[in-house]
Image (cartoon, rainbow, N blue to C red; front, side):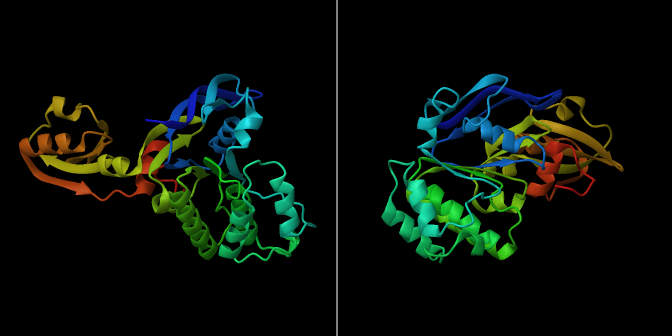
Length: 299
């Protein structure tokens, strides 16, 4: 697997608070990678370390083959970045802002920038202060894409947008990622955004990475089985590799599987049972399983 980002053993403290704890994962080139966690999970801190804007206390980060701490300027010329809050100069017109950004990027493509403005229906002579939040987010994406980056990094890009703007933004992002072949790494706590465009997912909670996996693979293997055995359950069966948790459910058991689903289900079929069924499991339930927050109503 060719890697766009590789993070190895990264830790970061702010005072006595450990914000990232031994975080390691890789982002495949050409993927759309969703970095998912509740607010305060450490997503923005990880992104700032990836971009070389923050130094980790330990560990290392490689981005497009460059060391994020030793080669941050070269790295940023290859990366498009959209922050949660777009802090553009409010008095500037869009065309002035584009000219300002173009001076930092040798690969800036003016024709591409104009094409993106037309796509998002942004008039070049509009001042930034006149733009809605959704329009500023799309302007941020335009600036990030106009220098044709190899990697696009977005930090909570749809946070605070209404459903219409969110859908427009994600459609544009998916379209551009497909057309350019760039790797897309985006953090979010909105699970529907991940389901709409991501092909890989990483879940982080309280600074610790819980899972990194292709999204379809995660959704296929991370499932819940309800079984009522005839008699006592086979002890070795409930300890099979790939079983994450076993809970009593009345006369039966709820078995949470995170891997080897087909093999586990076939083994359960062979054991004497009264009931054997799959319990519907969506991405929200999977997320809550990994973050241990089932029952509190927050994703």
